[in-house]
Image (tube, rainbow over all chains, first blue to last red; front, side):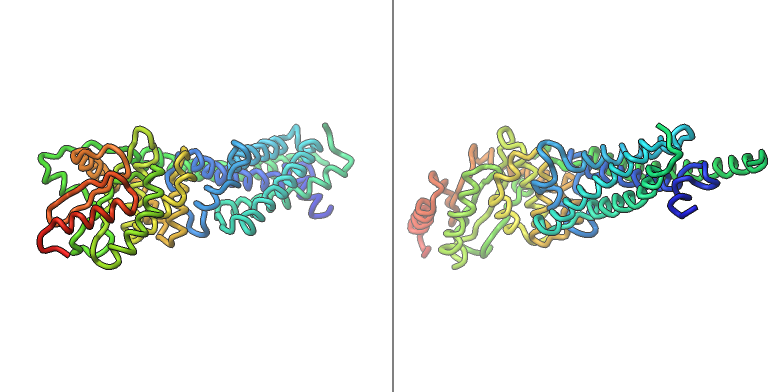
Length: 161
Length: 247
């Protein structure tokens, strides 16, 4: 059994998948980071505390919203979806679910692409960094890496649903 | 798989899930605590954006509380006073086109000093009061005039914002102010009393619109009806010529 297969199958081959635990916990951290930014955008937190970088410039730029929707709100919803999916995927009835594996892989891949675009905007267009956005970009990259073993599950013969 | 192995595996799975649930709970508790604290302090300790009620026993008490910000030689014989509103377009054009001419002619030469008093027209300009406080917070770090001009230059950008605080912080950052210190000042009630007192002073002096320009020299205070450079220059020259021993 390869490392990836062990991560998918969990200890002993039929336990909870370690990678889904990692995805759940990292998504939970990302959820709170996005929630803080969303609360700030809604005017609920007062001035944003930014030890490193220039959060105020990034958060007040035109790129902080897509139409009427704050980017932070998209982050909150996205992380919440990943938490629910990964958590569900840890339950005995869904441990072998290929659908959940596929959704985790596709969702985190899409989020990485979106996050890369936002990071490009910070670096090249806004020319200012927001530490929370950088933390979120790192988290979503780690989540995507943690979801890669799901590809093994998708290829494997044992999946249900 | 024997029954013994199955039981051992089930115990391992249960142990892993217990550790996972413990970690999940810990991360959730920390997250709720941090975000809850930020929202709580934001809601309950939020930036004061409206005048506060002040009770002045007499005019002296009001004059003591009201504070203009001065540019130029404090001992200059002439004082040009502006009652202004950061959200008023007329004040914006005055600050960006008329005041620089006054500086070149009268203030830099030491003939006059310029004093700005806040007079936010809160009934039509909901962000004007907090903008006035933001400028005062910048004054704490000796950048009042730079911030004052920044507010007027970017007036269209923040005037209609429902949450201008982030934008005000960005201007402070642009000017190299200490963001933490500025943020703490803005997210409080600091200078709400001074700005409110300035409003009261203006109201008692008959100010009703902005910008209102007054010229003061040797005890004579004259209101300038037009806010263009020529009218103000003429008022200064007139008041000086009427004052014995001046020039």
